[in-house]
Amino acid sequence: MPTYEEELIQQSKDGDLDSFNQLVERYQRQVYNLAMRMLGNRQDAEDATQEIFILSWKAIGSFRGGTFRTWIFRVAARFCTDEVRRRRGRQVDSLDAMFPEHNPLPSSAESPEDHLLREDLSQLISQHLLCLAEEQRLVVTLADLQGFTYEEIAQITNSSIGTVKSRLNRGRANLRDLLLKNRELLPPEFRLYK
Amino acid sequence: MFGRRRKRECHRIREMFSPYLDDCLTSLERDAVQFHIEICEDCEWELRSLGATVQLLRRMPAASAPRSFTLAEAPARRDGVPFALPGMKRLRLATTLAVVLLAILLAGDFSGLFHGDVIVEPPPEVADVAAPEDTAPEHQEGDIPVQQAEDPPGEIADWPPEATEPVDGRVTQRVEPGQEWDLPAEHPELPEAVAPPQKTLSMAATTSDSIRCPAGRTWGCPPPGLAEKTGLNLAQSKLDPYNHRGLFE
Image (cartoon, rainbow over all chains, first blue to last red):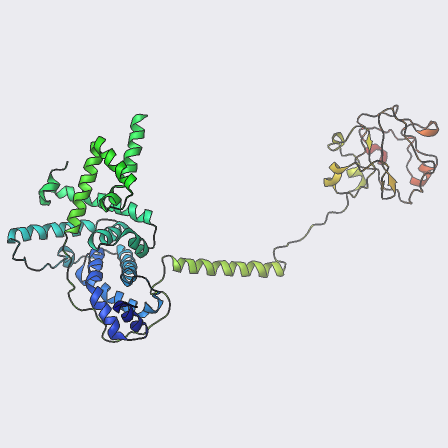
């Protein structure tokens, strides 16, 4: 008994654009967030997300089953990695890079002060994520921000689980070292460390 | 010694920190990590700081999509992978180069481009091969192989063939020092043009005195009539057992 998503995938393979658009609506936020973390620029992330879904539509015939989320993230991860490498040669200066995220207004449960602190911290982490090597950035984003398992990350990045573990370990440690340089912005539990 | 081992152990345990935080270790590995951080303060700090970093990351809010990315119209489809695999361009270029190189090699091989001129060395002159002083000591003492001059030098080491085995109508015989040379009663007819003496004639350990020929002849005394047939005046030549050049000069 196929799931609803599998039916949508099959209809998309048969050329039904509406079915595919339902898949887009389901995954666009996650794909956009990955592009945002990888590219660090809102406009580039938007363009990349649109390109990723166009590529996915064109290539959905090559989807041979399995998890569609893993498949579409594979397309997204490959596109973003290529884009980062392509842009490495030319320095991109953009105001968006300084304000990479647009977070909604604070919820009623959060004071304005806490909201600002959280905004600062989020921006700090986003900036430091961009300092990691793209392989480490991708694995950290997939594991800690998107919640993929090691096996899924290995499929998405087309690498072994050992490589995933190693990149994740180094990425987290490098990010920790970068964050410790701005200790005053960190939460209290972080400030206790040497 | 102990410090180096401890450092290795710390490195091994730290490699397991991320799987430990993500709960992806076996119970044995988990125990090993917990055992180690109890005795190693540095690793304990490393684990706690990594854990705090992971918590910070997981608390990061996900940005909402700024707009809808649904497709208004269906772009033209294509088969195959949505993008080239990494290194595909380089692989394609390398394959093309390899095919072109192979084609050039094959064409050159068929047209004889790479064969060059084969230099066929003429048979060495008799005088040149008559006294291979460098090869003579390699032969067994007492060997008197009869070998044609045009034999390739590389086969000299294979000599001698079996005793009394005819080689091109000639007879090879192993004669030990002091042993009588058993010549056949009837000598085969010598050819009109006598082949030059064997280049591997070795007399390193034999002297003319130690080889006695039948009918009272000694070594160096040819059979009667040989001088007329060959045109060589052996009687007047001084046969040097270590240098046969004088025989043909």
